[in-house]
Amino acid sequence: MEQYRTRPVVHPQRQQPGAPAAGGAAAHTGAGVPAQSGGRPGAPVAGRRLPRPKLTGLGGGLFGCVTMLLAGGIVWLLFGSSLFVYGLLFLPVAAAIALWVRPADLITAPISAPLAFAAGVWPIAGGSGGFGGQLMGVVSALSLHAGWLYAGTLVAALIALVRKAALIGKRPRAKR
Image (cartoon, rainbow, N blue to C red):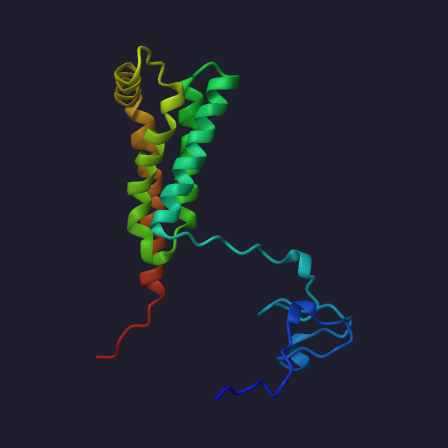
């Protein structure tokens, strides 16, 4: 047997300025501007922070691989396959992977960063002579520029470690 909703659905974002919010009069300011969630009653809506993306471990890895592949293509087109520029672009991508991954998947951030570096180095590796030559170019680029690879992995690992420590610090302690 189906049960139908007896009350109308109220969407706070779609409300008219004069209508009261679902949470009562405290969730709405007198000027017709919704208050920040937990902020001052007169705070502007535009001052709110944007929601942070929460990627799964696989999503963070795919984000990193696609972003670094695009970065490798741009470096190949604009900078003549400069691995220095590619390495500089890798550091913020590694940080973004570690910042945007879900708390449950924090362990995947330092793993996804080197995979993303390896995926994106293919366009600028400089190999020639078919698949074997391209593969040797990628291996050479990875070995010669391992410093960028280690630096990005370290950035991702440190950010993941700090985030995990902050999560552990927020946990309520059991009373003994």
